Length: 145
Image 1: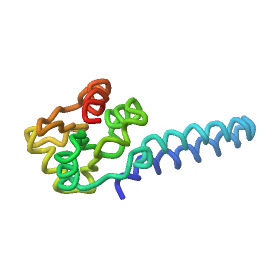
Image 2 (image 1 turned 90 degrees about the vertical axis):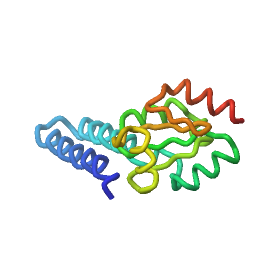
Image 3 (image 1 turned 60 degrees about the horizontal axis):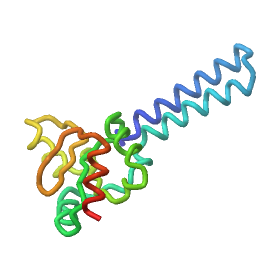
Image 4 (image 1 turned 90 degrees about the horizontal axis):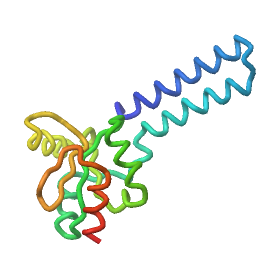
């Protein structure tokens, strides 16, 4: 549920801004444009842009079989969003673990980050990398292919 708090706040704020624009006679076109901007911000900050997450144990099992990276992430994280967007289609070839949904994933992230839940944390061949560059992750994905 908390993964949807930020997107819902964007939609709520967008509604208020659009209604205020209508009251101030900015016109329905301006109000609609403002609302669209806030809805797009909500979409980008929602879990919808990420591939369906799996559990940490399943992701580690799959990674051991196919060699693909495991990315631990959480909704609303700007660095996770940047990584997801910059990976483009390659994001579908990575195993995504939402640490807010999976307690084993959160524990794994805390174990490699000194107790902090710093994301994105990418695990490749058993080695953890905290907030790596998207180009590096893309290179790791192409190596596993």
